[in-house]
Length: 79
Figure 1 (tube, rainbow, N blue to C red):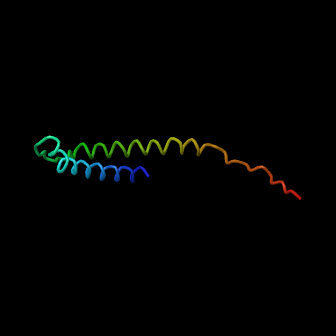
Figure 2 (cartoon, rainbow, N blue to C red):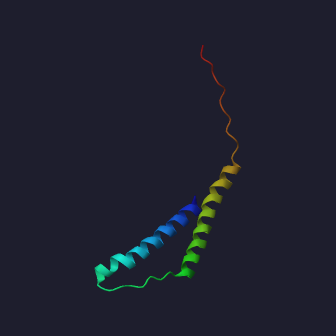
Figure 3 (cartoon, rainbow, N blue to C red):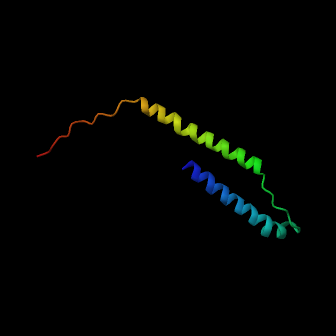
């Protein structure tokens, strides 16, 4: 789910940035801005996000793996 969130967030963010710089900002500012993508920073943010989501998944999983399986109480049949 973390990878999906990263991809969707990146696509929507870049699309909105392009939309705003091309259509909205000229009307607000009175002049046209160039749209640039900082590729190095985008890659670094993607790697950092992957690291954080891996840690967020591994730590609880390790704790859960150490637990004993739950023992179900015996079923009481009502008659």
